[in-house]
Image 1 (cartoon, helix red, strand yellow):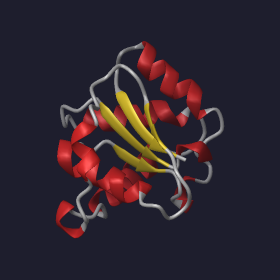
Image 2: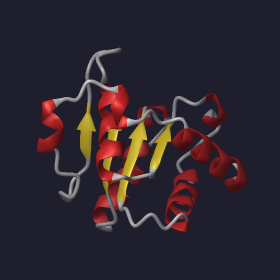
Image 3: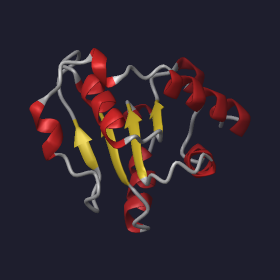
Image 4: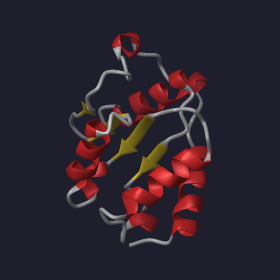
Length: 130
């Protein structure tokens, strides 16, 4: 479990460190991704193949700031119940986006239960990677 105030600071610092679109080689497939389908979108691949870079390009394209990278050591005690706090923080920012971008979400035990609940509530489409 993690404190909401700590989680808010972590999210803010991660968002502020997202590279801008000008620092990437643009991938042509990015225009084929529809984040508004009623399913989770999983981006998987071998290590160091550019999954996070692709994720950053999507973040820049859709102007979504609903992003959380679970490889951050400050999130080592994050558990399933903390997703509710994340959702409140995302909604508090009122960025009018129901698209959530999660990087390395598999680091959270039972993460798939939360993603399924989002889809069932038709709350969001989610990008996450392995």
